[in-house]
Image 1: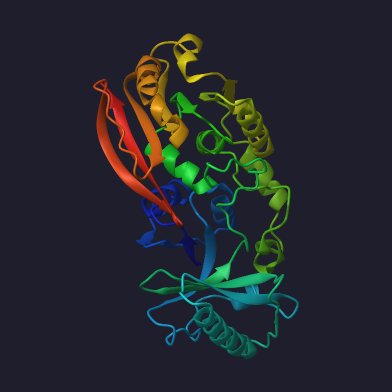
Image 2 (image 1 turned 60 degrees about the horizontal axis):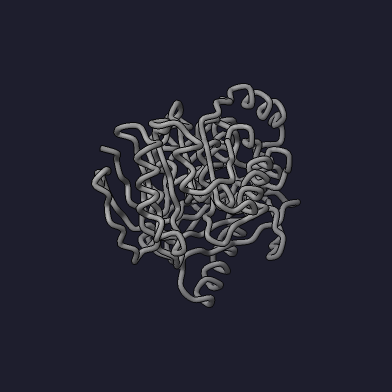
Length: 366
């Protein structure tokens, strides 16, 4: 079964790596989209519940160069596995400018879906507010990717972020920064100015193998699809839990007790609180609290109010980081930090998320 994974801009490479790690399959990569095939239901569910970089996973109904060429005559999919008389649906159009244009495309696609389903004697209802399933039409600037959304919700909006911080990120961006920092299983990580805990939590999810999505609630569209009717979800969730790692090698600190409290609560909601050591301490206490050369990786998100602490960050980082250890700085686009002579600049790049732009600097301790 051909699938499209929709991702936010800039996450394509990391998402392709993640898909290969989770499924052993190398996807085709397009702007904002990854294309691959999976037949096994367990493999599909591992990706849905375990992926940290994917925004949506849709079952392919086709890839088209133009709107006018969209049709479902050659769909290589048993549509009865997803559509029925009892299930309602709607069409969502993404990344097309103009509300009128999106509505026009949606109406056209609805008509073509109905025509195809009529051939199979299926008569679903259209429901715009709370449909049972969503047919996505995503335009990436070159092609229209059309498919059935397996979840019906945005996977990057993490269910654990009940106590968010205004300066923090969605889960997929937190995961992006973790991967950029080169943190991996067996390394010791320190996350500074942790805010609501997203970066530390995504790091814990990445190395532990815990599911990212909530397995206790049946909110995804897939639970209504005939395709999964006889699948034993409880057995799948239980079996997968047995493969988890419980290594505690992540430390996170903040100077605000409110932030630490929020981060702990968020970590508890997703089940990784015991894998992260949270501390309410000041930046200048790191060399007192932690041993010299203790960490392999450091990640600091530096907002405007903390930019004047850069020299102290370098001092503390040079103490607690191992030789050749990695320091990742996340800051605003127009910030121009000096580079300490204790570190080597490996790379710098802009990171776009919607209208906001951040910049990251990857440094290595000399």
